Amino acid sequence: MNEFAAQHPILVVALPKIIVVLFVLLTALAYLTWFERKVVAHIQARWGPYRVGPHGLLQPLADGVKFLFKEDVTPAGADKFAYFLAPFLALALAITSIAVIPFGPKEITIFGQATPLAITNLNIGLLILFAITSMSVYGVALAGWSSNSKYPLLGGLRSSAQMVSYELALTVSVVGVILMAGTFNLSEIVNAQQGFHWGFLPRWNLVNWPFPQVLGFLLFFTSAVAETNRAPFDLAEAESELVAGFHTEYASFKFAMFFMAEYSSMITVSCLATILFFGGWLSPFPQTPFWAWTHYIPTVVFGVAGLALIIHGVRYRTAFGRVVLPAMGLALCVLAFLCSRGGVIEIIQGPFWFLLKIAIFLFIYVWVRGTLPRFRYDQLMGFGWKVLLPLSILNVVITSLAIVWTGR
Amino acid sequence: MTPQIAVFIVLASVAVAGAVSLILQREPIHSALSLITVMVALAGLYLLLGAEFVAAVQIIVYGGAIMVLFVFTIMLLNAGLEERTNVSRMAHFVGVPLAIVFLIEVAYGIGRATMHMAPPVASPVSTRDLSNLLFREYVFPFELTSFLILIALLGALVLARREDSN
Image 1 (cartoon, chains in turn yellow, cyan):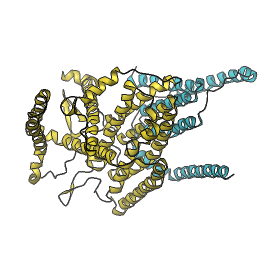
Image 2: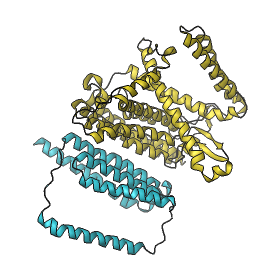
Image 3: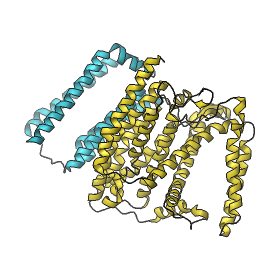
């Protein structure tokens, strides 16, 4: 098997990695919709999905089945080719961008082939992400134009103008990080953030010398939210003005593809924010013997969550829930036990902290959507061009000066 | 046939097919989409030659920024179907033969110049080397070019403003 792997590294190493990442990503997308509905519901003092499965856990499955069996209509006078192309383009580009995200530091070995914990490790990883972002405008623009309907056209026009404007601020806001790391390679950017100030403050780019990228991070996250067309920048689908914006005329699975594209870009942006400003997979605690106990944090988190799920599950309303919830809790407890074993405990550190940081960012995404009102269109353009862009250029200038000043 | 040549043939035919379809399409948006295909295929060719940075910038600038502007303008103006006229007699008798002769000449010239050349070795050019060249050796032409673009931008702005005030 090892010989076969050496001869066909693409077949044995790359293909399984792609399949695993794609499977995890698509599952995460489905449950992100559940997560968003739950969190927004609780912000608004509602329950959210509750009927399909215990705590609505099967709701994504039900939604998926529903999307598949709905009638797929094409509006009269639509441009057939572009109408079909738009959702494919949106989803394909959004999913492709996950390929350059590194998930952990350790190389894993599959049949004697060492390979990084990412689908690819590119020298221009960050640039590829921006290239994909710059292309993803077409999905929205074409969908709006090809539907042959006024609201989608307005939505498409709005969002292409918005995405082009905010792409500038997005790109310029990370230049500070690139200057400090000296590379476009995402894993090297993370590795450049290793170490601690005064023994406890992590040298993440957010608080790293010579110039902490706090401003850079705020600019990046704001323009990234706008770039993914999420509230409070979701003018492309402002339902109070444009029915549903660019995807008004889409039904069935083509509509679902736009949705999956949106959630997929949310995940990518969260990954990117983590990697660029929050040290990626690096633990927030120093790697000294005094802090060795922090290696058991994954175990404690999974264990407590599992136990809570079991205790809550055995008293659940429905019989189905009384079976499923404790089973999930048990699985979490087993995972917690595995995470405390030697060998696994080192490998789990990177992915655990990475996924935890991503989860926090996804929560912020939903939190922002649940609390902030939508921008007016002229405010949106004014904010992008007159506030975000000058500030991000200022950030670049100050960072470069600081780097030259300290001579690093 | 090495994988590189196979990839080259695929990308090159996509680029040529895109360019032909750019001219033949009657719907302006379809022409723009064909042009985007050409740009992306070209980026792939750059990548094949080891120029990672140039490939990424090709997609960001041409595939993304400039073509989005094209698509945006077409959508905003709602340009209709292109009208076809019969080819004028001049083009028919002089233009087409001249174009064919020109194509043959170019193909012959390229073929003769590269026949005895060793195929270029695709060695990745690091972004660091590229930026060292741009910002050390060629910093003056580089800055001059950006200045030129700035002047063009300001000029366009002034022209647009003048029309507005009338």
